[in-house]
Image 1 (cartoon, rainbow, N blue to C red):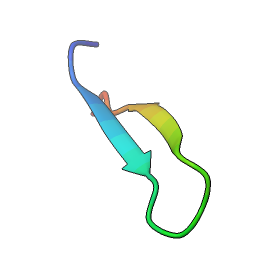
Image 2 (cartoon, helix red, strand yellow):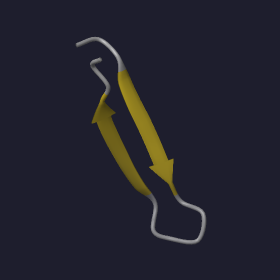
Image 3 (cartoon, helix red, strand yellow):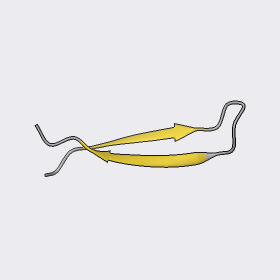
Length: 24
């Protein structure tokens, strides 16, 4: 743990924030 991927989508769709755990 320690790294995370933050994806913010708000182009033509409703603004949504997704957080994914990238622990490789």
